[in-house]
Length: 72
Image (cartoon, rainbow, N blue to C red; front, side):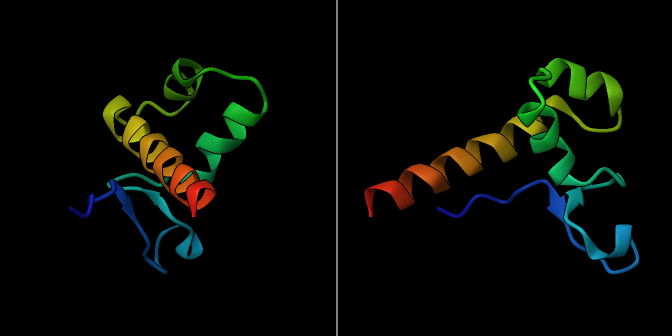
């Protein structure tokens, strides 16, 4: 079953960078916050238009893709 991610890509929004659906928040920002040792809660506090369940869905998808690649 294919998961529908809460991400959209539109050349009119943030120059086509993947953003959280319905926002102008680049998905890359989530990973940058985590890489900089900031928590998911801090990310959500700084970007209140992103829903917690959407951020978790992106992280879960990334984890699953990584694990699938590692097992291949």
